[in-house]
Length: 212
Image (cartoon, rainbow, N blue to C red; front, side):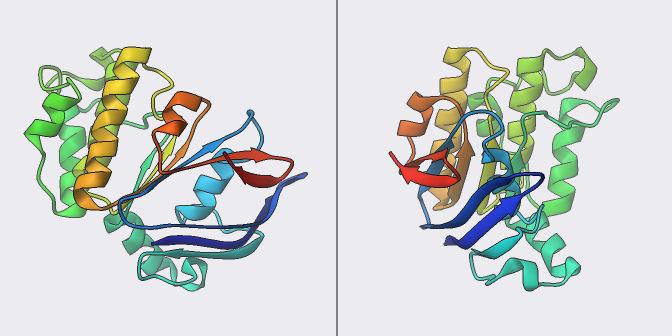
């Protein structure tokens, strides 16, 4: 289970206040909203990356994660959480397969060849990252996250660099992973069609999450 209670955050201005929601195993949640509304910040709050100004986040068996030590938070990031960023953050100078092997070392998991085929990157993983197109790099970054076998995935506009058809096929892989592993997905997106594929869909507007 992933649960947020009273989640509040601001920088110069208030982004959102007193958000409450929970997601259970096998479920997915989409957050829609205009740029700058706070979608990415919510993901950062939930994924251990940014402590909220106010509120509590529970992940799986870890209650109030920001009351944990840095060592315990690092363990959650390493084994339980996978983050798909808008930018791929691959290791330059490495091949695709070497990037995947880093995830294997960190999580003690093996590369899933069927997953590489499903993402249509089996033929390019031995190339240097710099030789790949933006779309190929994004699919590789998603494969690196899935290689960790995370229990909770946070995805921030994960298909922004992909054409519509490729985006659909990539998200099909992610949704199937969630269903197969009984994991949890939290997705920030501008794509309403993709949001409708999720178990729960919310619009972040006027500093609140409204169910749609």
